[in-house]
Image (cartoon, helix red, strand yellow):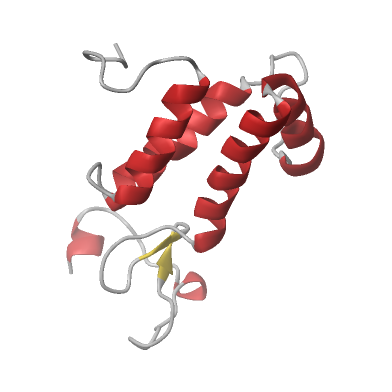
Length: 126
């Protein structure tokens, strides 16, 4: 058995069998036919970009941290910037769905527009 030969032990309390017609999730990704994120994740990115465009960066950041960011952090460390969070979520979507995915490209273009980079310039991300 590959798992045991590599020094791991199966925790039978944490495994379950899922039929092919049910959502099969592993570490937050749906893996039925191909890896994908949940719809809520895509909707969250869309909402974050909309809030940034409509209300401005500061108000969108304030709302995100007060209502939606529930992570436990070291009280001495600084909060990550809203820009970094949005960019990270977009890049995660691109990693899972592929860089050619239309939703990834649309979100990346909106992000680049919001930070003031004109689309079509040479190597805008470097």
